Image 1 (cartoon, one colour):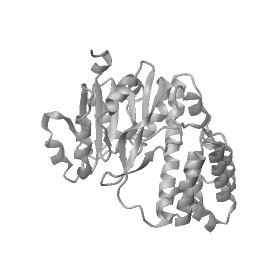
Image 2: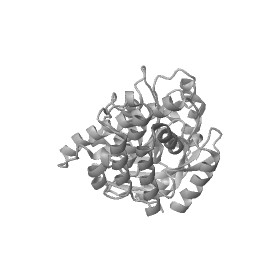
Image 3: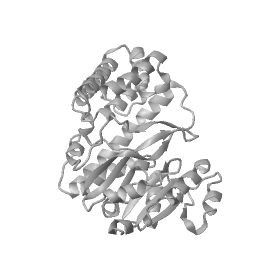
Image 4: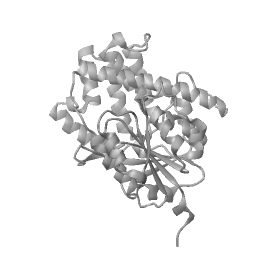
Length: 354
């Protein structure tokens, strides 16, 4: 006996740029779904490696979209979505992969109110060895109507590209992704706007793998400062897009919503502390950001102990001498920089405080 859910068409859009070494794994995982109605679309964003050869080897089993010029994450999403037909759409990064039951589990839980479904992913290394879970199990997803969180702090607890599925009807209200502003991090645009058009549903099991690869070591200030600046600016782009889209549905986002978001404040404090000359907000001070971060931490949907620890971290970065503050920053934001004893304590605290 088959339910009508078995026949819901699903599109998996794989966005690829120079990931030939991982791409076959991603495509095979999409083609290997237990759900019957799945189309696989592979968008190659003008790769210079052997990606084209990998894609060609699948013939008609996939729909190939070869972009003549590199346009970035947002452009690849737009190209793939325009070629898709599924009522449910997944965007899969080419270095990640899905488990065979992923789409079936999503479809089984789907209902007409859902705009976005989110699920956890195993963090794996280049050899597909499981290292952790993302987001961590002790950090609960935000589910249901998340617009109150969005209107207050322009963020809610969600996940990355490969752990998301979207209703086509909701995507049609927010696509295309602005390609210049979201050349990177197009998933940030989608998850920020799409809850305006339906509910968010969460699955706490891992339905795929989020691959960590490449070098995790470089010059401290360059790596941490550059990453933090990008994330701060990305948040400003998200807030701008959300403010405009919210107007269309009769909602208003406070212009300072980011200042109630501990994730944003963490990166903003890192940007200022590591490289104040290139920090994008001239009027910021370490103390004001730290105070805002401590206050925002105490409103998070995690245990009291975890909230208090994060608030204390913010205050220490705001009050300590700059060199010490940079060390405290790096210990939290760049795991490889932690002294061995601190790494052990951090692991213990994670499970105790969860």
